[in-house]
Picture 1 (cartoon, rainbow, N blue to C red):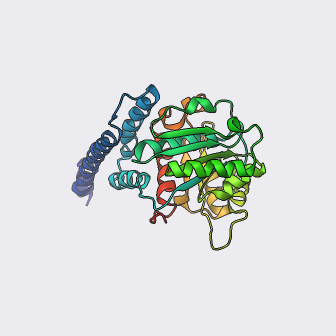
Picture 2 (cartoon, rainbow, N blue to C red; picture 1 turned 90 degrees about the vertical axis):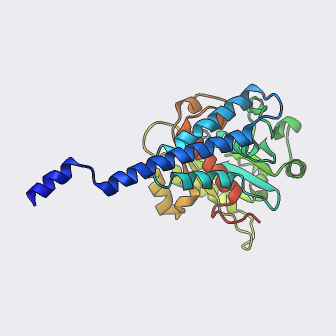
Picture 3 (cartoon, one colour; picture 1 turned 30 degrees about the horizontal axis):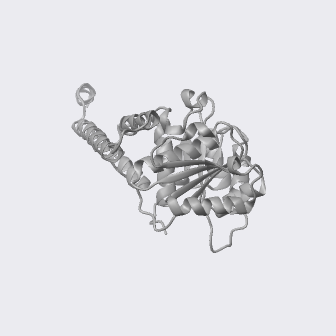
Length: 306
């Protein structure tokens, strides 16, 4: 027995070695498939602007970020994300992005989600800043994405102004993403109530549970019982450190399903940049934003969008 044990320690187990080889094959196949998909979708039909080029380059880099896990499921995950983002829609979609407090990344999440939908899909998208945002004008310039600042059109917009704008955009675009943030006005609440998809954004500090609880309450306010909405929660790490405690608290105390909760990693470039989501951050952050876009397009449960 002693001899067998010594011999086993010195040589790799054939089954383990076979699994390792297979995992590497899956990684290589996934990277090739993703690169081909991105090339197919992002081949420009006319001369693109600089931001579009940066976004295309960032999405090409995503392949390595998703498939570097070494997991045998990597190819399946990559296919789910890309097919989710490109999920066919039976009608126009209105997506509200809300937060329980300011400064947690709601605006970045809204613009990153809208940018990915506009870039990877054959149809188009719009993003609307519902709350005052002096930096909003910097986010225009992505092919297929219309950026509109509600308050640049009306100094003191009403609920009717919001509905008129959303109606016009919905007639032109498949997705209209409303950046609400923590705006508590009647116009902001009307924007949330008009949405059929809601992303609740929070940080990962000890107060995250209460902020998400507030966001969920706003997402469900005024909706009839037969028309529920199942929000997706984005936990954005705005500082370095682990998000594990916050994720456990959100799932245990609020009963959130794991597949409706996306953790956006801390990204130094993103934290100190005013540029839109996936054109700047690292691969892990790109992957998180892509997952959010897939959940928005395919629905939280991945069922056909009605």
